[in-house]
Length: 252
Image: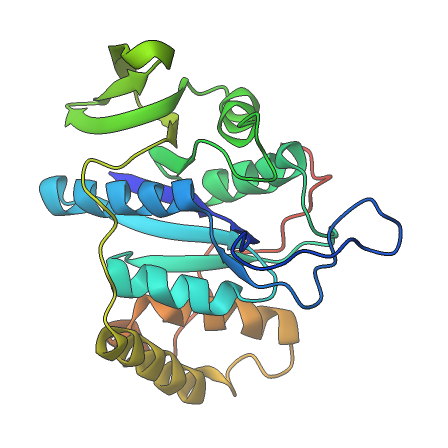
């Protein structure tokens, strides 16, 4: 089973906001960003499924400031590989536009299950997961608080207002909007994060000359080596099939 986790950075609400010049958005130049709380739970649920059922986890995020460190943290927490997707949209990227990019990535990665946070502070209506389900024509459930694998399906617990819950059996491939993971998100130690960053540095030195004539190919290869030291030992690593630039306007 291959699980793709869509991760997003959001403004840190603990900091003071200032409006942009046009008064239509916050000034993003000096504000800090952090991993969306619900995406944090989605990543944890994916790693738990990996530990219980031997799933493979790929963390995916749209290219932007702070994304490299976010993906390094995802590797340190148990993701098997990561992908940073280039795009030409200005932040904040609307959920429907982000869904088209993530959907194209899901097709390329040939995943069986997509997990993402049920909402963000900039997507209060939780449009990402439903949009992904509609674009891919996959079953979708949001406000999920528990996920269990049952053969070719997942059994999920969905939260409702008033303290009510319901259990659903959803056939894969599917999209789930995670509200809370089955366990609290794990802490990543500084030593573990440094270990991942060291592996990334070694990978860079072993691949920087391979795709030197094509900067874009080099960037894609560089993202692939974030899988870890084992892949880095290859003397002549090749570019993964199907990895390319995804556009928000690309037809699925």
